[in-house]
Length: 255
Image (cartoon, rainbow, N blue to C red; front, side, top):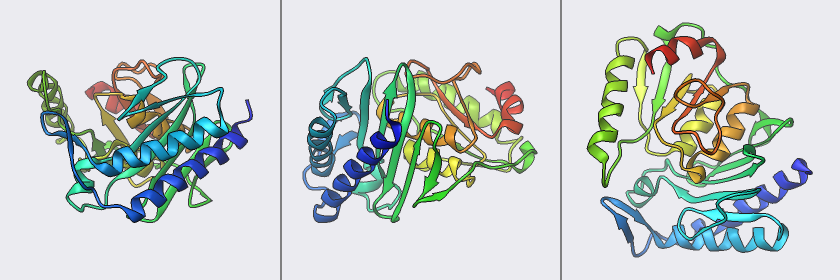
């Protein structure tokens, strides 16, 4: 598999998605559940990126958050607007996230932040970049100095039980780390961890369109990406835990 070529295709696909966001406003909202919605931009970006990928890589399936698709095998995984609630409120923290899963592993990732003007890219063995410049995760060694991002609170059926875990995590983390941050977009949190802004990112979920691109970028930036039990992260993991190696054991103990 030519990952360098596939990375170029992914970057071009995301550029086409960004162009859609530049000419549209959120428009009418489609409600998918309790406080869970998609905008007209979500659907338009997904259709644009999907059409391009199906043309350029017809042998690779595409799974999009809004319109579904391939759920196994080698496949592209796309979140057309990660952080839709931020997007519709005018908060500039949202992203287009495109990853590639091959043999059960995230091997390519491109995450673009149209409102911020930054693009993160990586392919397995080729390193990670921000706007073409190499990046590396934090070298923090003291938990008390760590800035840790956490995933958003759950909504919808079962939210109370899911959020009990999140509240418990916050209670354990807060006395031990310097600060906790929740920014409302997994893709952005993962890229900012890869860039060394955050020292770790912890979320008790693993929707592939949310995480796979960021997982590939974090790994190529020198971070460990694990499930909540410390095993290597995969599309089947229950959680997504990206961390600089020196802080792994201390944070895993809290998990």
